[in-house]
Image (cartoon, rainbow, N blue to C red; front, side, top):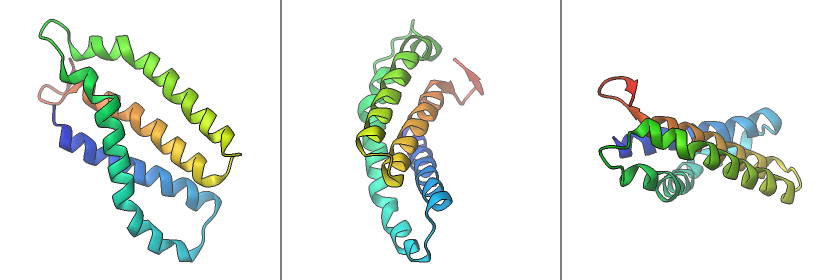
Length: 127
């Protein structure tokens, strides 16, 4: 499991989703300065969230329990909970574009991070 690579890919994915949604709905030329500045906080938040919520499932994996079993057992419940929190946060924020962008990027990034963690890249097949 190559955790730093997964964190880097997740941060890039989150960054692209976050700004992609904002640019589709509310594009202003003055935003380009914020794009460069947002790389650091997006990477920190994304990495911390993945390290504290997804990584522990795979960190203590024993030899008799495969990554695919961990994925099949815990991923559906994790997806339901994260979707619920994302929907709740979006509703509480009154559907403004920045909270929608934040919660959508968090949801889709964590779902993809689960796939990356459960995959065995040495054999290129799920384990």
